[in-house]
Image 1 (cartoon, rainbow, N blue to C red):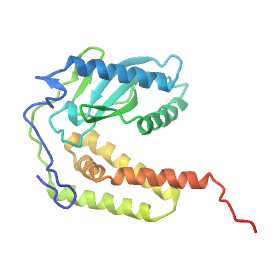
Image 2 (image 1 turned 180 degrees about the horizontal axis):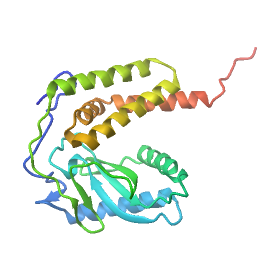
Image 3 (image 1 turned 120 degrees about the vertical axis):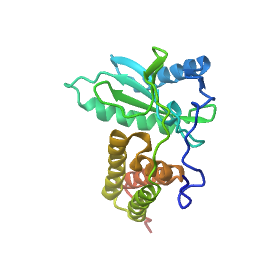
Image 4 (image 1 turned 60 degrees about the vertical axis):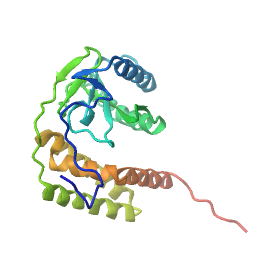
Length: 235
C-alpha cells in the first residue's frame, strides 16, 4: 500500500524484526544496555522520590514487524501511580514532554521517545518487550495486515484539515483541543485495531510529514505569547 498524496514511503511490513535492534527475536545486548542507561537518565530527570518502578519496556513499530525508516522506539518507565496522587499523571506528562524536547536521543539513528506509563493502564502495542526481564511481555505475531487504503487517505485528510485550521488560527484553545482530539482518536484506534488501525496509520503519515510537530511548535509559540507582555515603543 502506498499513500502517494501523503507519503513517499509505502506502509511497511517485514518478515523479520528490525535487524538493527534484534537478533532473531531477542534484543541485542548492546542495545538493551544502552536503553537501560537512557531509562536511568530519564528517571533521574523526573526527580521523583519513590517512583515505584515496576518495569522498563520498549514497544511500537520497532518492537513489531511494521517498522519503517521514520519509526521511533517507545521507551516506557512502567510505574505504580497511587490513586491518592492523581497530580503525578500531569507531572509525568509535562516532564516527559520536557525531556523529549531537550534531548534528541537516537539508537542507530532510531529516535527514542520516553514515556511514563501507569502500571494499571493498558498499553496497546503489537509487541512489548521488558528490558528488566530481557524477554517479551507481548510477542508480536507475524500476520500481514489488511489496510483499507481509501479509509486511511480519508482519515488523514480529515486530520490534516483540522491541523491546518488550528495552524492558521492564533487561538490557543483551538490548537490544544485539536492536538488532544487527534491523540484521542489515535489512542482509540490503537486500542480497537492495533498499530495498523486506520487512525494510527493516518496519524503516522502526518507525523512523518512533520505536521504533528508543526502544531506542537505552534502551541508552544501561542502559549509563550499568552504568558508574555508585549513591549511598546515609548517616544
